[in-house]
Image: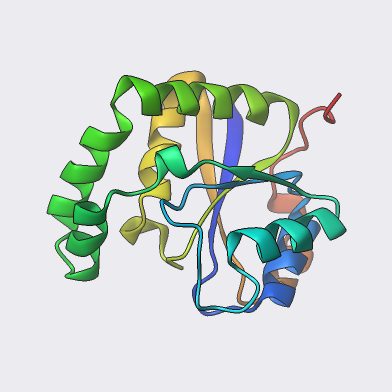
Length: 166
């Protein structure tokens, strides 16, 4: 079974975030935010891309897979059933599913991590993107960037690396 990681940057900083990705061996970060801007230092698109590239991680901007505004508003209000309904309809559109298919191909060649803000994947659309990748044979592993050393302590439990990018 193939696996894809997910991660949110809520509650962490860019240093711990990058360290987590490095420890786990992530090779590409798929930014699935509709609006890849952040008030949190280091997490807006250009700064994030630069930081990732400095540690050898590829940045994949996939705003097509971002949550539309009504979905973000429902999630912010805590109405996760409505959020899930809105985002599922969005991601199931042909143009979104073609991006999911491309992401699945990329994940065959590199260890990919889906990125968004929310710490808890259950309240984030990246979980739904990961679910759509299941039809390509993927399972999800959720990362938490607040304590990168937990992955050092548990390195033996992490998924094996796919072949390197060509």
